[in-house]
Image (cartoon, rainbow, N blue to C red; front, side):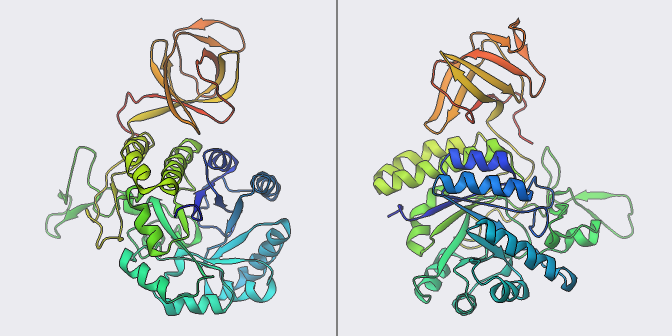
Length: 410
């Protein structure tokens, strides 16, 4: 049942793209420095896009270019020129949200496959059918749709029109991301890729006659997060999504680290593979995978709008994670790994090798500085190369993770 389902991962830059491919994504989505909705992600220069396409296509996978900005009229020519160049380079599709941008690309770059972004807020079969009749091959559904409504919508659409939906990651309090809060408060446009995320700030209530007296609306140890949405997590509901007609399962996170991308992609890859074997295999592995998801930085989870109104509706505080990304494997030979340090760890710590096979625990017996061979008890300089005995075969792009001494992520 799950074999034909695409697992689509975010690629904020080359490191995230490589992690997504290594840990099991079928396709990735990323952007150029302009025209995507993550202006502060690493994104891809033209040279990097060429390299990314070669890597992706060599593995028989796909790269979708996000061009879902809402362009002004004076940007339309450069927008079209960028899409034309990307098409010639071999991107598998472009994501667009603006109707005018869609029509322009359909007319001027007809060979470019187009996907309709969730920013277009597609909620009904009539809208989806219109885009399909005009040449779209896929609709990324609005995040506000319930499972029942997706199922009903799918029944009314031609089979060749693909449906994509978000399954994991940050959610937005505005309508499928169409928010003006950042524009008004900071001058940074959310629909221009420059959202300052003011929904994540701490807010309080002030009574007019009592200026300076800030009354918290709902406070915990970290603060008050009235507008902050919970993170989406549908790992335990993949069969229902497939039965409803979702053909591409999308992970949010182009601002996330390579470790985050690897962790989430790995969990959904293992879940989909287990489901392809049987429902029983899937249900058996899901609890273990839910524990794995806790090892990457995240806000508290809910299921979005899939089963009615989100519950809790809002108030998600800061990030948390049960384990910490401590290093990246650069090479492994004869039982010794060369590791690029991310966060401090000590001799005697129990770490995990995180690789496509899963999470493999081991105890750190020794640490040596790679350049000098000096033996040390700990290391703390990010990027420093160290040598440690590693009892499992590993490869470049695998990760080490260890105890989270701060008990929260960032």
